[in-house]
Image 1: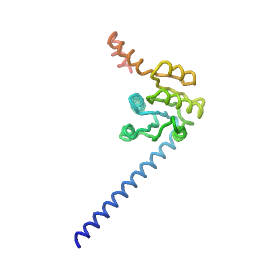
Image 2 (image 1 turned 135 degrees about the vertical axis):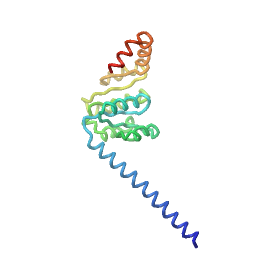
Image 3 (image 1 turned 90 degrees about the vertical axis):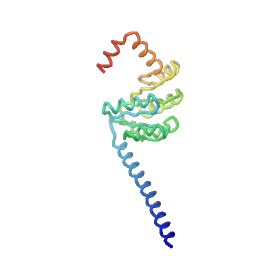
Length: 184
């Protein structure tokens, strides 16, 4: 009889713990939704890969408000750990995410996803939703950079080109790079 009583108490505790977990997640979800619903003059960062992660860290260091949109839960851990506003999904497939991130009141959108095709789709969606939004996008090739410029992306970054230029400059003029890093 005592074994049944102990089992019942343990089952009840497990039920309460799972309910508490669901309740806590719902509170966090509602807080995040409220935070995003009230954001203005912010940046939208699409993608939290190697480039997007650096962008988000720089925006956070500057104290600028931003919303991250990422489809990969593993990459979103960084946003959760740093208490950054975020939405889960793929803008290339679901442009309503841009509306949910309040593109209508955003300063700019930074598209830092891995594939050029996705970058192009996202840029087209952003431009269609808000013709005057400032768009910065990452490209993997010069051909993709040309296409992005043609569809109205304001600035295109080629990370491999930028990285190669920076590394050559560090080797050729290390004192200049140190001085510029100190200024920044």
